[in-house]
Length: 586
Image 1: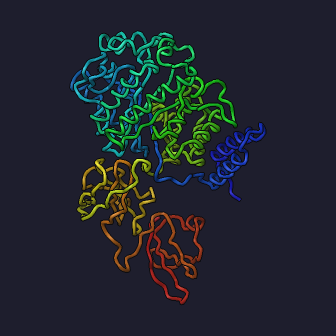
Image 2: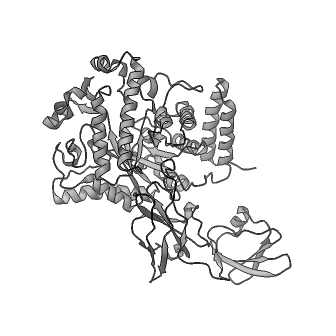
């Protein structure tokens, strides 16, 4: 009988309580809920309570530039301060890479202003302390280049409908869209917004998305606040409705307005670069479900955001629902997104800022349960709002991710609905080992589209290198046909190496090895016992060759019994012949 660790017991009890509530209230699909509960129980069995690490999983963070909340804290007013501002960002990216995240949702349009040189809107105040002032470098280009160096995707996060409060609009002066295109704008509850009902709003936002897509090597366009504001039923769009509503139901007309904007942006971005992912962050509850009520706050009815329709229509590649809730305000709505994903990606946004004592002081277990649950039901990753609370290790969050969830790297899944053909494998591999480094070179791959390719590098002590195993990932994105690796410690060096080519849609070629196992060469077993064919016996000896034990079905308990040391492995065949097969240092 397995005993759950304290952490696992907390996770288990939370999900059990959640599902018990579904059952006692008589919600539909209770059989499915019980299936999820059983899966959860099985996944938590064992002393370590560790999930298998998926190779493909979106691990994202929202990096907020509004007010410099996440970045920048230093203003770019001199050469030294520009370099300090850059270093502040690269330090954060280094930390994200070290934690094996792979996606940065980088706030690019804030409130009617942007963080790159634009012909549409002025520079944001956060860069220099003054709206419209040139920071003397291109922060977006710099961020993209630095993300790609670290194997991180960068999705340009665009805040769509809000323009800003009166102060912010005033700082924009004559460059504000309120001044330049007043017919597009509405003042509501002290804040300026673009009017979704005016067809010019779709033109305006698409222009910004196209400007970014055409001029920058972004991996995605991420739409935030692509909806009507809170209390949206009182939004002052009566004249727009009279002009364009055509006697349609007002609520449906508003939903159609938002969908029209989404469709326009998606179509225009894909026309420029079909590999650029288009996503958004809708309100975390789509609408009331058969399992649970949204209690008056949802995307569909309150802010006119028909996000599941966008997936069904194929005008979105991914959704990052803002699921900043806990308990039964999270699980049934996460299931609803998963069941209506239409083979696109759903990545729940987790409100980790609520862990902070000055916010809602959540227990860390709440977020741990949500990550476990999202993996069990087949969601496509996790996103964290926001970056400072993640990197600040709020209540030990980052430690838990590194130790239990993101122990190994993961890559963004392929966008197969847009393209499913992998590039050709690299050729002409060369491997040299000067001193303590490994120098690898190869010839370029060819790609079937104009998107271009990059490369992934794998290494293992077992041949052939298993490229489906995330433990073997050494580098997730290499833009050149060469790479140098210097392990931090000599015993972290690997014997066998392989490289694959990846197109910008995420399709990966078959691997090309750099070196092959020679005949009669012993295998170095890395943290695992050899496989024993039926009828064979594994013989384990110490470094001197003295036999320690034999086993026909070695398992993890045997690995634990061996402890640490140097071990030799041999296989005894049914006819009694013995052949050495490898060694291990544990």
